[in-house]
Image 1: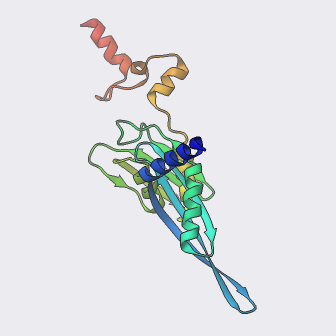
Image 2 (image 1 turned 90 degrees about the vertical axis):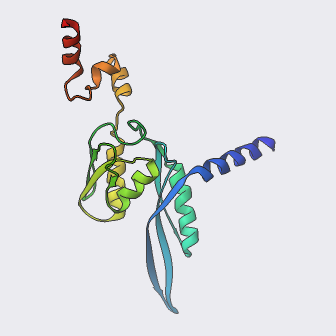
Image 3 (image 1 turned 30 degrees about the vertical axis):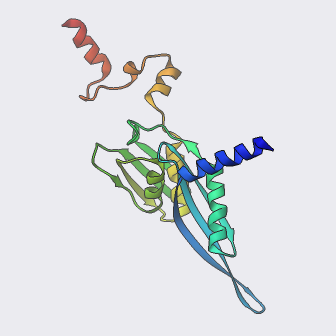
Length: 191
């Protein structure tokens, strides 16, 4: 009994820290003998602002119930995305889902979030502060979200790449002057 209470308290604390963004609400009508019956479908993005983000959808007869179902679905689907300096992405990305294509580029400090619609909601919930993104193809929010997550799943941090290749992070990352790390190392050795 006590363990269940602690788990529920932990879930409540986690839930209070989350940022949720409503992406879209769709009203659908079913024609029946007595007239029309309306239902609602909600699409929601949830994140902690520190590198975890997820999206979900829910359907119900009431808007509030559809949003609650979508939030629960989004919390289940949360994934961790590595961020550079906690403000932008490590490298440029390309994602695709159906007819939706997205191009996501890193940006220098002070750029802000230059993205539209569903992609903006993802970046705000993720905690990205500087990014430039473009959607090509469809403007369907479901496909744009799935294409954005398809791109974010390809994100690799320099630490992960270095570990996979058996090298040091300095050998993988280029110096900020724009020259590869190997060239800078050779210059230091000559001096």
